Image (cartoon, rainbow, N blue to C red; front, side, top):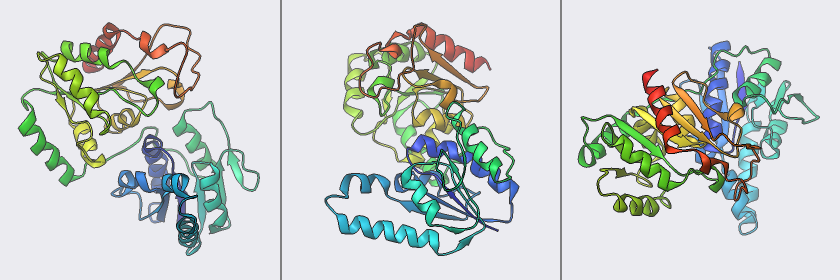
Length: 334
C-alpha cells in the first residue's frame, strides 16, 4: 500500500503531526508512507521511523520570493507537483488543509483523498474547536484509520546529543539538573516578560542549572538580562543550537518552562516535566496533553484573541512568578 500524508506550516504544528503519522503506521505497518512537509520542518521528520520517503516544499521561500524569483517559484511548484504525481497512491491525506497543501492533494494520483477543513472536492473533516491532534485524527478516521496516538513523538539524534553534551561540559555544572527556559515565541503577545523569566531563574538557580534558549535574534536580549543578574549562573544557548540539538537538550532537561511555541511541543514529545504559559491562544486546542505538563493562564478575563502583535489586555503579563514556581514544583512532584 502506498500512502501520501501532507503536513506543512509551523514547526510546532509539524511536531503535532507525528502523532497521526504514528497512527497511520500502526494501521498499515507494511505500507510505503510518503510525507510532504515544509523545508524548514524537514529535520523534525527526517529520521522518523514511521516515514519511508520525505518530500519538501519551501513554502516560506515561495511566500517571500515569488515576486523576485518567479521562474524559480514556478519551477519549485512544478518539481513538487511532479514528485506527488509520480507514484500512484492508494490513499492521500492532507492534515493541514490550507490552499498551499490542498493543491498537492488535488494533484496526487489517487482515488481516495481526505482533508482537514471544508474543501468541497474531497471528503473532509472540520472541527476547529477540537484539539489540533484530535482534528487530524478525525481526518484519519474518515479514511478508516483508528487513532492510537494522542501526543507527539520525537527521537534524539545521536550526533546531536553528543554535540550538546560536549557544549554543556564546557558551560555548565553537569551535576545539577537542567531547567530549560524558553522565553520567546514568534508572537510578541505570547511572550511572558523576560524580566519575570529572570526572577524565575533566580528562584530555580539553587537547585538547577538554568539554561536559556531561543533564536539568534533573542541572544543579545537574554545576554543583557543575564549580565544584570550576575548571581545567577545561567547559560545562554539562544541561536547556538540546531533544531536537532535543541531536541537533544530538551530531552535531557529536568523541567521546561516556555510559552505556546515549538519548545512546548518538543518537551511534550519527550514527556518532560513542562510548564507552558498561555496568553492569546487557546490551551485546549494546542496545549500539551501529558500528565507531566501543566498549563498556566492568568486569572483574568482573557478572550483568547489570537492577536499576534499587540493584545490590549496583555493577559500573559498577568501571570505571576509565584504561579509559575508553584507549577514547576507540581510537575516535578508528578
